[in-house]
Amino acid sequence: MKLYTIGFTQKTAETFFGLLKRNRVDVLVDVRLNNRSQLAGFAKDPDLCFFLDRICGIRYIHDTMLAPTEELLKKYRSKEISWEQYEILFEEIMKERGIDQHIRTGYAGYQEKAVCLLCSEATADKCHRRLVAQHFSGVFPLETVHL
Image (cartoon, rainbow, N blue to C red):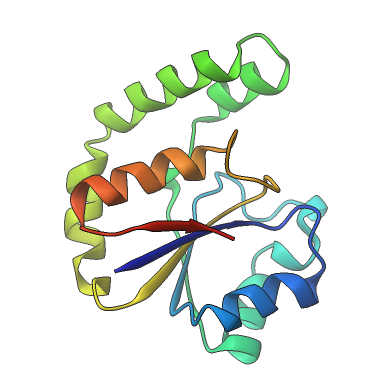
């Protein structure tokens, strides 16, 4: 499996879809809790699914098992907790959900594919998609590239 991550914030549609196409992504896994926000522009469902298929021939999966809870998001966005605390709490949620087993069984069929994790943050350093990518690399032998 080749694993990429991407955020749509601060990217035009041309840049976003161009990156996916140039990197020959086969499957985009949306790890956002809410994929229908009007603030997401071209990256909201059902538009994103349509664009991915028509522009790039990419399969779309929305997997909320890989998303934070609403409560955790709210605490972080309101600055009630730091990024470091967010990471710890997110990892606890992932452990409770048995995320490694979920990845192992749910994504085993994609080992020969290029998979990209999608979230909204422009960079992966303070985004949960980086943490999810670490779980993927713990389950499958792969290297992660943050687009």
